[in-house]
Image (cartoon, rainbow, N blue to C red; front, side, top):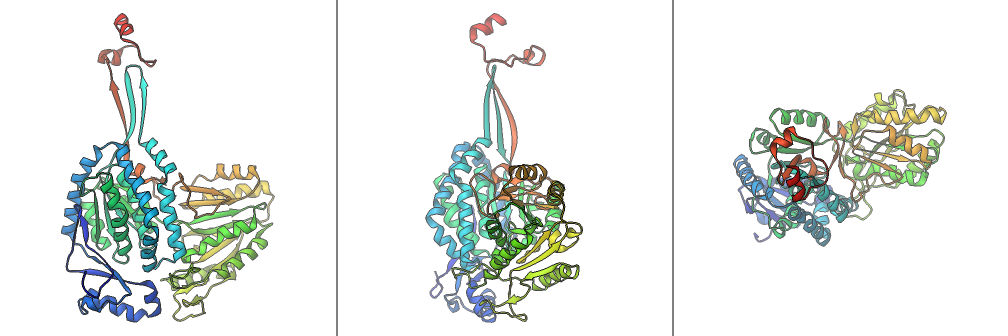
Length: 550
């Protein structure tokens, strides 16, 4: 470590070792960027462009990551392909040990991982939520279920029949810029499926990814006896890396996170090149609140729409509220929205994050109100202390708009598309008898072009059953529960429509990056009889019975 620089320093990781280069991306603590944006940017750029020596790095420079090039990527892919062949031959039980070791390491190092995420700009509460998701996603209940899906055996007559999932090979993962660490760490399941993993650390936020991989995944692989080269992590620009993955004959699957329009096009490009796309795109989740719902709890769940300033794909994006309780629900939601505030990421109560496209927020909100939507609360820009600042404020007030009527609601961008702002439309349907209203509401939800998560708040079992029967889209459906809370066994990612593309579904990466294969192992099978003779589907015969029958 160079004297004067106390942050983390990570090179390109491939082949089980690090290689440092001449070009680095520096991470300046997010709270320092909020306190002194121009000064922090000058420091960051000065270090990256060589105008400042490393000794000039202040304590707010929390780390640096080496920038890789196409040759580094090519070497990483070759190493991954070689390791994948060896790893695939190892029994699934041993490969699953990687996940168990990872789970234990997350528990042990949770505070350290959280601190790195906070330094990169995650509000502390949300960083804790993300780590809770890592634990729920890799706990014993989930591990046992996935293990049961990887192979099933059945004895039938003279044969042992197997249905097993076989690893695809080399899987490349491109995490999003807003939740790099949690999404990159989904790759632990890719490894458990028997694949090699190559992760692109985004240049905008590479430190958390490299730190988490080094602290959690690398030691988990070592403890499981995995071959070197099975994991690679490189900080490279997105466009050339994705193109290199598409062009490389060594790449089998690509996990792509991003916007729906670009993602669907990228998925088509993967298919055209014979690669499997696993798409994690936008979400536009709908929460239905029925007349008999617990309104206080429903309002709490709807307020999750504002966490991280709505820049989380799995938060509520639209509410549909029974007209009989709409006013009461909106009153509760408004109180909760006004209590959610910005702040430095280290602050215990901060839940809002800076919004980069405040101009787009104004456009979407303006379109809605011009079409008749009523502003319930919010709509302005704030500084880090929560004070109104329409000129330089990088935060946006939690905003609620009321949209009356299902008809025409999807004509508004605020309802039809993921907005990625702290902006929640509450659609209040026409005042119809419940027997007519419920089918109209479920049809409205199921007509959503996206399909990440959906929620319902209701008490009547008949309403719950009708909703679950009518809403087929979505990778996850929750009833009377937190919309974003993680649960063991259930998926954290995946969906239908514009969320996951034509092959979209709930995403368990160990299953999505493997393919189903049937196997028959015969014991004394006579091929001609198997083709032309009587089908043998009963219990296995003894040797004496076989002699008598032949």
